[in-house]
Length: 101
Image (tube, rainbow, N blue to C red; front, side, top):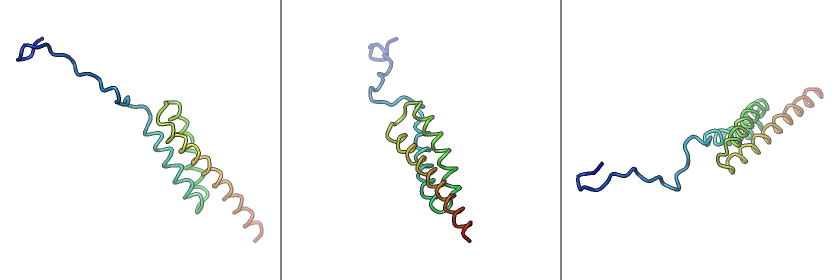
């Protein structure tokens, strides 16, 4: 098919640097955010660290399987694991303090 100038109409070229849609980037960011919330919240309330850490860890593993941004996913997984540890330590310290009283 020709345009008004008489030349052929070609489809638009694909941009070589464009990222594929739906690669799980949202899961990676959610994992990172939950890891941060878990670490900070786990210092004050252990249950926040454990719950946010577990959810963040699951989302990080899912995002890693979808091969999204490796740095964000790795940061989310590490922070989520730290949040779980902080939450468990918080539970242990609470149990020790309550048993001494």
